[in-house]
Image (cartoon, rainbow, N blue to C red; front, side, top):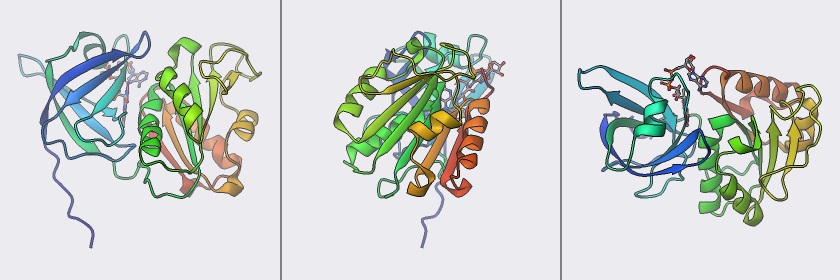
Length: 258
Ligand SMILES: Cc1cc2nc3c(=O)[nH]c(=O)nc-3n(C[C@H](O)[C@H](O)[C@H](O)COP(=O)(O)OP(=O)(O)OC[C@H]3O[C@@H](n4cnc5c(N)ncnc54)[C@H](O)[C@@H]3O)c2cc1C
């Protein structure tokens, strides 16, 4: 018998620590007493309330692996945004706001899933996928993982040092796409890469890069795609066109194409 659904309530989160990942992305470590735990891929809702009672709510993926006492979100600052400039810029240790979660039972990776894990991230879409990579390491899973990570430039790679280290010690292969480094239609190999041993291309994701960097459809990978709406739709279409079954592709859209 399945467990009855738990009613989610707002809980007070206290910022424990902040870490700048790039010039525009910051990780907040949160202390949420009684946090029920999460599955890699899930997100939470953040509610900010002003003194006059006005409140704004946004969703943020959980980047940390399920681990008692550790809850991290990483926020990409949107210059004219309402919520992200506070979380990434103003919030500091000791500050409090409300959170509700974990949310999303479908967009999750289960540690006993035997299928190769194919992760496609656009920008801050790396956050829930990083939770999967961290969990994969935490449980010592031996299923191979391939990450295809699209960013504007080298300087926009979130978690670069950690991805580099994890690629060295675990069955993780990383391919970077730099969308501002070259004309979109060429996707030529470029030299510069923040992660030793990884491949890098200039331009957007296309069929050629996917064929070179992803598991082939015959290996029946479980594919997770996350990022801006435009990236997610293009990546999912390319996966299906390459022969990956739609049932094996899970997508999460963060918002408009930037
Ligand atoms: C399930 C889910 C998980 C998410 N996880 C993360 C996460 O881990 N990290 C993270 O940084 N964001 C994440 N987001 C996006 C986040 O919820 C907000 O949309 C984002 O932070 C912008 O909020 P804002 O209030 O600053 O901007 P808003 O005031 O909502 O928007 C300001 C302007 O920016 C545009 N805009 C809004 N969102 C985006 C975007 N994502 N990209 C480009 N332009 C945008 C709007 O169209 C508008 O023009 C997630 C979204 C969803 C649905």
